[in-house]
Image (tube, rainbow, N blue to C red):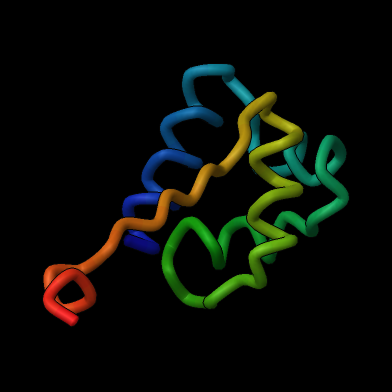
Length: 73
């Protein structure tokens, strides 16, 4: 799931022709941290990921589903 989210980040950044350096300016998250996020070399805090996506005009939505095991109780 983490790599899916980071793939979306890269896709959105590229679609908007925004460099990592520009994203640093927009989000307040360092370019080094953005690069680490995009390559999977770090597990970023949720608030950091949210800041980066917000600067691209996006939100990250989490949807919880019941597992089959929880329905059998």
